[in-house]
Length: 118
Image (tube, rainbow, N blue to C red):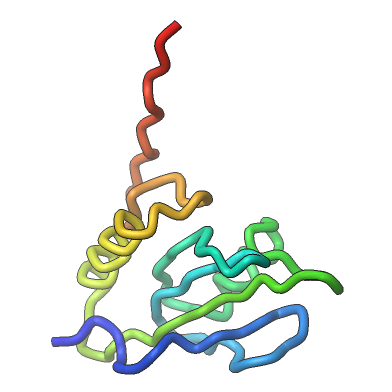
């Protein structure tokens, strides 16, 4: 069983409104900064709502000069929130995005900070 529908992620730039706007459906998403680097990975039951939450929080930059984008893949109808969270954790571990403060999934635990020697 697939967790997400086949194909490449769909891209959307909220500043220019280019691409296809995320629907109010479950899926996985990635936020890319102006340079194209993945800075956040998440899973949600409503991609449109979550995109707007990230715009309000400042994780997804908008404005005349912004090239920040959100990429998303719709969840396969047979997938569950558990399988999607496991996939999210795997992708966070793989890409180590700067703005993810946890390993992903509900009831998230914060990333442990590295100890520094004094």
